[in-house]
Image (cartoon, rainbow, N blue to C red; front, side):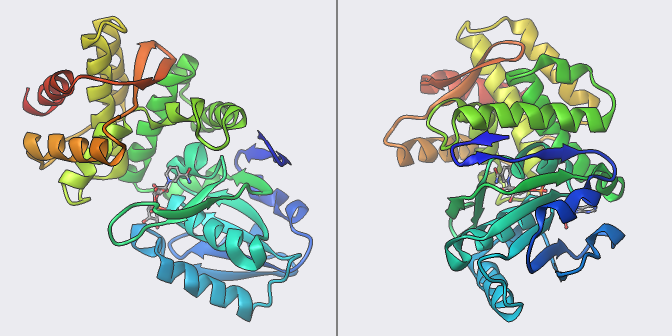
Length: 330
Ligand SMILES: NC(=O)c1ccc[n+]([C@@H]2O[C@H](COP(=O)([O-])OP(=O)(O)OC[C@H]3O[C@@H](n4cnc5c(N)ncnc54)[C@H](O)[C@@H]3O)[C@@H](O)[C@H]2O)c1
């Protein structure tokens, strides 16, 4: 994965964790999600482990402060390394703490959920939530390496796997249609990780192309917010993709058949699932307030064709309303 400051390897496969020793050259602390099985590859000289609870509630400023206190207690110096072993929440939290400790020390990402393997561990975005907003505090801090050891996926609950598959469908629809035909999960992770790395290498700070990765997230976030965050992120994104594809077709950017293709890809993974417990009006209100927060301009990511997304579209309110009504009411 190339970025302004250099490049780092993204290793994918069962056993990738065995390479960890190559990316640690001083004292190191592994911040590990407590639900994970213990793997012998984490027993390395100089590497200590801190097991903490993962999940969205862990991703707070208080959680980051606790980690900084642990870094101090473990005497992590400038030659120290933080190894984030967990899903996106642990990766974002430990990555954020690593980025501000001593103005930034080395970080290795060991993603353990499908979502983290295909998305959050790559690209250098870290952060925590505030009471009012997700990922409101954060930094860009590129890891030294990403080790996606697919053995971890064996213990992942089906619901989490489905959530990750929503992002996989996102990559197929926006960047690489070939992903849709892959059966083997390791191949899927490899190909999605490569797609993300290409996009981030071209636009590290999200000034253009990287916005493609937000496909489905405008209505997805609105559904999450309108449901009081009871709808899982991946499922909300799947609903959001359904809306975005319909907007694309309504605006004549793509054929209506693309909507059916996407619906079918989502269905294969049981997505989006049950209709979310939200009122149409609440979703539209959440979308409108997002728009207001961005000076009245929402930049939609829409589809031109399979694997071809475009950023920066402004969409008339009536088209948004019709598409959201179509997915939620029909
Ligand atoms: N930094 C980025 O670029 C970026 C991109 C996308 C999403 N994110 C963030 O990622 C987070 C979501 O990530 P996630 O879906 O991985 O969530 P998560 O870290 O909360 O993991 C989901 C659940 O699975 C458990 N878990 C993790 N690995 C497991 C395993 N191998 N076996 C069994 N259980 C396991 C966790 O304890 C948690 O309960 C969100 O906070 C989101 O904001 C960040």
